[in-house]
Structures are given as C-alpha cells and as structure tokens.
Length: 408
Image (cartoon, rainbow, N blue to C red; front, side):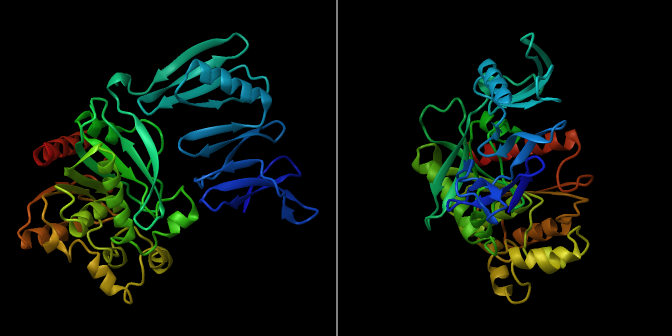
C-alpha cells in the first residue's frame, strides 16, 4: 500500500509482515515493484507512519509511529542529534519534537510524558542550549505515587498473539492484589499505549492491579489480529479477555478470587458478557453505556449509527441480523441475564445517541426480572461519555465504593 511521498520522485510503500507488523520500502518505478530491502521494520504493530516533512524542501525528515508508545524515527542527522540531546535531558520519557523549520531550528517544542507522568511542554533553544518550561499537565500528580504500565505479548488459549497492558500499583509487595479487567470500547480501535492514563491510575491508586487486554478485533497490532475479531463478540474476543486475567493470576499479580470486569460501550458489553460466559471468574461488573444486545446495533434506528453502517459495517463485523440470530441470542447479556451471578453497576447517559438508553433500561429490567443484584445509575444530561466534571467525579466515586464493597 502507498505510505507517503518523499520529495518529488520517491514513493514509499508499506508491506505487511507475518507477525502483523509492517515494513517500509521505496518503490522502484523501473521494475514496478518495491525494493527488496526495507529501510524500516516495525514488528508486531500496524501503525500508520506519519511523515515529518520539512516544508521549504518537501523532504521527509523522519516518521512518527504508534508502536508501544509514540515513537520518532529520524532520517535527518540533525534531527537525530537533537532527539538524542532531548532524550538525555529527559530520560525515561516519550519526547516528541516539533519545529518549523527543522533545518537549523531556533526553537524546538518538546512534548514530554511517561506512564507515571502526565506530561509537560518545553521550549528548547539548541544554539543557546536553553530550556524553558511552558506548562505542566496535572501538576498535582505525584510521580512517586503513580503506577508503572507495561505491555506483555502473551498467547491466547488458541495460540494467537494477545497484547495485554498491566498497571501494577506501586505498593504491590509481591502478593496477589484485587484486579480490575478494564475493557476498551470500539471495539475495532486500539485500547491504550505507554503513557499516563487517568482511569488506570485511579484504579491502581485504590490498590487494584489493572489489566487491559488488546483482544482480537483491536486495531494497531496487525490486520490479522483485527480481522480475527469479526463476528466474535462474546466468543473468542471474550475468551481473550478471560485469558488476560488468567495471565495476571499466573504471574502472581492478581487474586483470582477478587476480580471485577469493567468497561464502556463495547467494553460495557464485554463486562456484562464476562459475567455470563465466565460467571465464576468475576466478583462484579461495571458497565457504562453498554451494548446489552448486539441486535440493538441494527434495530435502534434512533441511534447515530448510519444506514450505510447497518448495511455494510455491522454485517462484516457483527454478522447477519437474520442468519446469525441464534448466535446473537447466545451472546446477548439481556437474553442470558439468568446466568449472571455477580452484582452489576449499570450506568448510562440519558441522551446517548450511540448506544441509546433503552439498551441500559432493558438490561436493567432483565436483571431485575431474574432476581439479580444491580445498581442502576442514569446521568440525564450525558451522552456516550462524560462532558461534565461533576458527573464524571460522581461516577468514579460510585465506582470506588462499588469496587470496594465487592473486592476488599
């Protein structure tokens, strides 16, 4: 696939690797084929390269890649030297450089952050070797109290590659901790990367090991990994989430008797489905804006899902509304509510157009009908996420109390 143009006569193309990663090669117009030898290889990640261009000349100075973290690969010797200077000054961080022009720059803007540091922005004047801090993100955060985030590449039960992010509280002393499996929404997006994250840090600060699986269907780890999630809601995708928790248990980080599953949107669906599919694995679930039945994606025509998505996107990723009815029923938390054993904190926004509140209301009714323990919370003025601080704070206070009741 074409990746980018480097100057007036050079085309760079991207080719896939067996492990889901990619390589960049220059295109040989004489042969009509990419050159045999790549000039850049990124194993295990399918990030789209973003060229950093010198505007006066159109020359590509380097690339930005989303690998384990945001990464800069510089081809220009001066930019490579500047990156080394900045990294030496700010070690153990991601340091992203911006300049205009970047050839003999007078100013370099540095965006610097880490897993235990929300970030700061600085100006660097190379000729004077002067540094000036412009601002700090969340200055009240104490890095010593923050938890480290690490990526692990493990094998799922069927041998497939399964990336798993783990945030381990700094107070961990080698004993298994209560765990929260935090499932990202989408689902065909990437969950996270190596950086500071408010949700994971909040949970870790309360003593929970946080497990974030990049289950099959997630983007960023190769097309095979993403496509393997098609039509696997509640099936192999759910198994990956379960396998991520089992991995943390086997490592001695997570207490198998004290685990909760949590997420929003698709993550809310997975939280509910986790209680259905693996009822003995979780003590509780927190589901925000959850898709409580995959069929709702087709049927709720007052949502913001377009007609084109219903006709093309949903059948590819979810399945055929009629032909796959039996599978949809088997993987519907509403239809399978009787199998749920653990308490549920069920939360929805009153003006949600992506997953309308009727999804949550019907799930709530199904849980009550089957005699299940559910706490139902509605934020009337919120949509598919939080936009008001008072609601966000109220939600996380409820989460803190709920988890404390179930896991401590």
